[in-house]
Image (tube, rainbow, N blue to C red; front, side, top):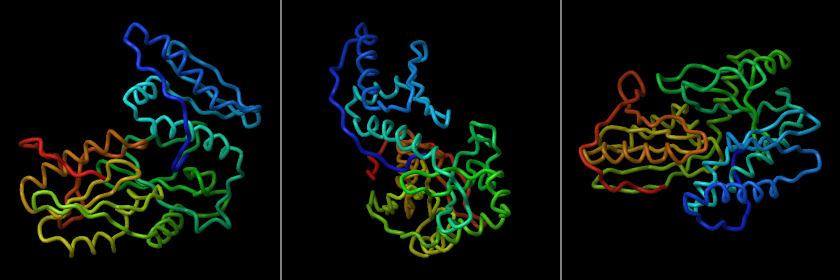
Length: 289
């Protein structure tokens, strides 16, 4: 799995609805050109509008859905298309790496996923995870540099590591990551956006020392949101507008993330963090990350 990306493509003309099929074909060819590789096979499913890119050495592959990518391109969201291309390239390359936990303990980190995230990998291996909240689970990843792989039970058995030891390693490594924030005020409510850009922003919700630090900093109620893997923000909730903006911002970010987690924000209570549904009374202008 890929952590971050950047490539470049020529812009496609925005076509009318009746020109959609032509645009899709042209778009597909441009994507395929970016993914040319002597040891990769590319198959196009016209009915589903997907590309299946498989490595002939590992017999593993990635399926790329073209419809949402074309929509992003027509909205001039070019970074999203670039990210998908990079995702395929780095993902296929990482599949060739021999993954082992022994000797790589310092590169193990927790990752937050939605409670509906699969419990098994695509090749049927049971992933290691722990329950977190009603909305989220904690999985574990071995960081490979430009990408990472989720840890399954077979990897634990090969390395003679228990799931509890894995959890302790991951949380210890998490606490060593930097914790820089961008701050923004909206109608008297202060938003603190994690500004790490390392792929583990949402994971920092598992650091109790950070939660305690933010709890001491706020004057009102502490709001927390992890809308997608690469986003975490805290809110010092002072008034009703703060709750509305937090809910709106969480939902907006949820729709923008490559690995969505939850569209519901959390509130800090006596029993820890709890997801909360906030019915917005109006549509205030939210902060930008």
